[in-house]
Image 1 (cartoon, rainbow, N blue to C red):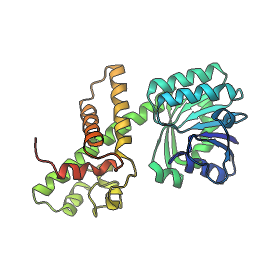
Image 2 (cartoon, rainbow, N blue to C red):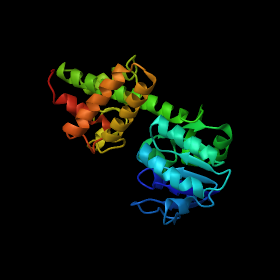
Image 3 (cartoon, rainbow, N blue to C red):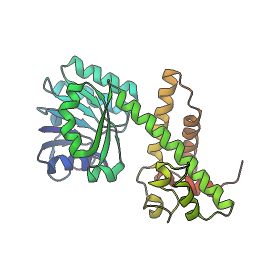
Image 4 (cartoon, one colour):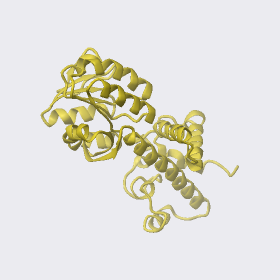
Length: 290
């Protein structure tokens, strides 16, 4: 396929590179980041979208997505698909899908899970909202960039799935870090704590696959000075999106609300910006009960 790729940062660049390695023609655009090897550089987002069968975007937020969509949709050929892999608010995803449909285009909201490592390795999971026809068009590309793509439903469903998933992730990471900090103060060895919890009812992804305690369990950012695999400020962004969505539909999410408040404090007041979201553990270690 001929593919336009807009947003070539930490996630977009390796995703685009994997498409090139699979034999696709990729034209890319980013305001600051360089194009990876094999990607043809365009002067504008509209130029990257011109003539493309699929346009993929990986952008910071919904406002930027709306602005980019307004530029690229008029440049796209009828029948092409605009596939946004950003994590944005549900309302923006639905608005862009409606705009694309009016122009005779397919549209997908397809946020990802797996981080930079998954983008590089081609093992991302895509949560996808949009029509079945648009999903069928892009599905072969999902198979190159990732290991799984789930068609979650109508436009906005992909973003809804991502927001709900990451609300669970933020809440469980906080609980895992709290438990390790409590175990420390109770004199429980961390390795013993891991051995018990990882095979008991406290089992979770944050414990078993991404343990926040250095030297315990499989390798994780905790073993690299909490250099981010998934930055705390990105978790804060996703938790804020979850609460924005919850407010829009009158959903009671007290744990999600509290997690958002804790990550906001951590990132904006306690030096957590630029650290992995699992760095909540040293935060709790250094605090007393309020």
